[in-house]
Amino acid sequence: MEDFLSRLRELEESGSAAIRAASAPDELEQVRVQILGRKARLTQLLRGVRELPQAQRPQAGAEANRVKDSLIALFDQRAAELTQGPEERAPQVDLTLPGRGRWRGARHPCTLVTDEICDIFKELGFVRARGPEAESTWYNFTALNTPLDHPAADEQDTFYLADDIVLRTHTSPVQARVMQEWQPPVRIVVPGLVYRRDPYDASHAPAFEQIEGLAVDEGISFVDFKASISYFVHRFFGEDTATRFRPSFFPFTEPSAEVDVSCLLCHGEGCSACKGTGWLEIMGAGMVDPAVFDNVGYDSERYTGFAFGMGVGRIAMLRYRIPDIRLLYESDVRFLQQFERA
Image 1 (cartoon, rainbow, N blue to C red):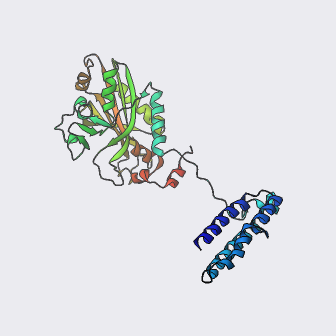
Image 2 (image 1 turned 180 degrees about the vertical axis):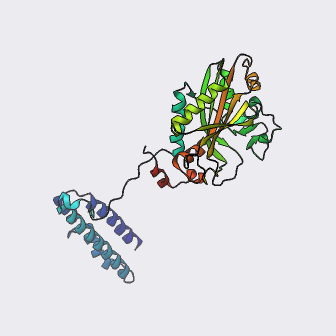
Image 3 (image 1 turned 60 degrees about the vertical axis):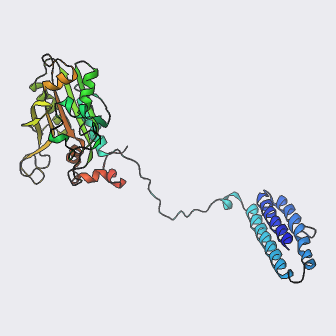
């Protein structure tokens, strides 16, 4: 009995393969005669059912008839396929269904802003520079005149990977690296990711894009610094945008300033966006502290310079009127459809 069923299964497999492989009606007819004809193997197997023991005949006959019906159905299906024309064999498409629009990618607003800022400073002779995101404490703090007992170096504010390795808290370490490698004149802008232990809310994120700038040469003064920043503000925000420099403190610049621009929404009249002041802060900046030059091997008696740093996300929020910085990190690509197409 097992030998009989095994021969049936083998015949079903080989017959099915032969039927599917037939590429013309004449060829398919030859396969039919070989499998289903009066002298074919299947016919011989069906006749052999009566030679089995009486108790095994019902099961053997039922299985043999199943195989025969299966092969006949497959034969009829293949015959119908071979008699159809090319158009009938083609997949049927319901043209009444509405088409699906293909979403085209777009550059992220932070990328748009970064490229525009770099292009503006390129007009002033600045070039892009890059550096590692995992930094030594010397480059991230000490070289920039920030002692390790400064609050900014606390573990509450900084992500430490090891005792002297951190995720950079600003892109300023690249300034120190460039100054160690190149002698003045130096003019660079440094875009990149930075990391801080900030809460994730409408105006803060623990990882965000920042862009730094540095200019070093003989005779650079605060006038050059103000003129460069004002040029950037007018090119980026518009000629009618006013600029304000407020005294501040940063360890690596002296004197230091917070740079504000007139509110883009109320044009200086006062609104909720600017908290009624008419001004929006965009960056911290100032003249490079001579101690930074001494740390990287520059002659602080000969060279002067200025540096600035701004959060790209904040600038993008101002440019595109984005109310919540968390939107910049959403995975919903529909958000990008508002911006320039790639």
